[in-house]
Amino acid sequence: MCGIFGVTGDSSTTELLIRGLKRMEYRGYDSSGICLVNGKQLIRKRAVGPLSNLEPLVENLPDSECGIAHTRWATHGAPTQENAHPHFSTDSKIAVVHNGIIENEVELRKKIKSIDDGINFQSETDSELVAHLLSIEFKNSKIDIKTAKEEEILSCWKSVLDTLEGSFALAVVIESRKDFILFARKFAPLIISHDGERGILASDVSCVVGLTENVFYLNEGDWGILTNSEAQIFNIDGDLVETEPKKLEWKLGEAELGGYPTFMLKEIYEQPRVVRDCLRGRLSRDKIKGFSIPFNPRLLRIVGCGTAYNAGLLARYYIEQLSKIPVILDHAHEFRYGAPSGPKSLVIGISQSGETADTLAAIDAAQERGYPTLGIVNVESSTIARNVDSLLGIRAGPEIGVASTKAFTGQVLGGLLVAMKLGQLSKTFHREDLSYFDRHARMLPTSMERMLNDQNIKTKLWEAQQYFVGKNHAFFLGRNTSYPIALEGALKLKEISYIHAEGYAGGELKHGPLALVEEGTPIIVIASEGSSHKKLLGNAREVASRGAKVIFITHQEDDLAESHADLVIKVPRTHDLLQPLLYNIICQLLSLNIAEERGCNVDRPRNLAKSVTVE
Image 1 (spheres, rainbow, N blue to C red):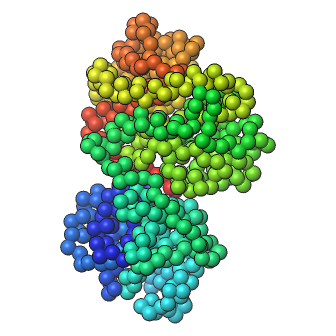
Image 2: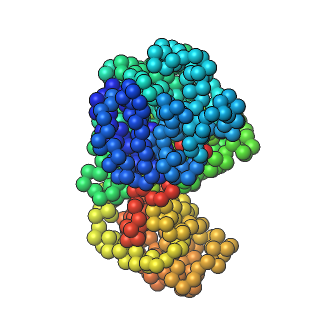
């Protein structure tokens, strides 16, 4: 969602702030702004729309060694310049940037007006309240902020934080103090870095790659002050936190285009590498290793949102098939409303960023109920990664495109590794099964690379793309393990092309969706394995008879598919458990081609954010 970046102790602050904002564009935003501190006044520039609207406004600003910046995703108030961050106190001496939602906003507005009726709210946002509250706290404490001691300022800052309910990552600068930034974190990501001369704070690690090698990952409730000389971090009780910085996992080139026209295309083509990295050190011919499962459960609960939910659905098929352990899959935001699962339950949370607010809340709820937790995440330094009992990192590397591609592959492999490990514990997945799987898994990256560079497939994708010209609706059908791919394919198409698309299990066709099929409706049918394949062919025949344009994705020569489909796209053959990953790449490429043909921004689709850090 919103992105925060701050710098203190560097004469190139303006340049660094803009650089940080550019690194956060992938998170999604509708406006942006920066605020510089020069020791005499706060200099603020804000703009609605892309960063290119802000950049001309900051070109000739005076040098400063301290500043904060923000990309806003509208939650309170429309995307206007007045609602863009940073926000000022009424006297323009305090500036704040905020990611999150202040849930007691109404009460705080009343409190502020009752204390000082002269305060004028300049925006519709909840974030502005923080600046006013801190200004009031300084006045009530009779503190001159120009000369106040550090401990006095920190005391006032803590008092303000104690009044806030909800989620927040906050950074604050003060007019006459160009040597520090106040910060705080609660249910929203924030990281800190300091090399002894320069301090940096940011919403995520992609912003600081290339600027520092070590960062502090703040825990829930942490707050403090970032000065030119050091970072002081306090916990929720006000105690100074003694912690060592962590070395950054990512490299600069991983977060750059590297010659590709879009991040989405780059990340699709990185999937062979993701397979190699995710399975490295974990898969052998006789054992699944490299991560732990807290115990042998009798029931699993999987939680996730969006693409992670679809990966969780595929994991459910795998786990139930290989280990015979029942699985309940929940949208993470609905998990807390359900009944407790009973003893010997394991909760698995799936998230690319490891900061997804709904998934974090579900994991917290699970732990409050006493359930062990396992996280399948990409960012191994994230909050989810730090909070779960056991971690399986998918090693996909930075994913910048808003529409998830390579992370889905990693999440599916993570779920498959869990399924095989549980199968071994349950003695339902045997050594010869693993050996057979291992042979195919080692060949999968090569099959992916061959498919990605297959000219015949590229031609078929171009032909398929033509069926979507002028269309505003499409459907994806699958059965068994191809059903989650139908859901994911539909999600990708709607995310980046803005075509309304729905994924269905083939058996649901007669229960409503068939009423929407008309002449020329594009329908992507994704082959399944075993007995369900013939039923899926029946679905294809049914929609074709009603005039739909049927695109069939399969790995086999199939005369029936050829006879009932307008177009067949054939992918390489691999192990049944891995076949869905190849089908999914075709869906990704098709969605990408359609979106680009429609002139859509595939890396930053409208109204969507990469990391959903508010509920």
